[in-house]
Length: 94
Image: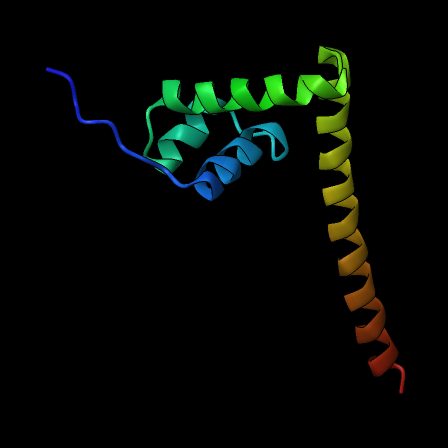
């Protein structure tokens, strides 16, 4: 028996793809967390990667881009922590 297909907003689809492509989630994990079929998310990710291929990125460049985005995210978080620590210790010394 076939289930009725569900419709998702473009924003939802983009956010779901971002979890996999930019945030490093596995497709099955992201799909489970979002409550969608893994094959549905797989199709969205493939479509997004196909659209990105118009930018002439190779598979290794996609992986490098993903790694660099994760590193930027980590470094940004570290910088914010250091800024807060600096402000805290500056108040302690006065």
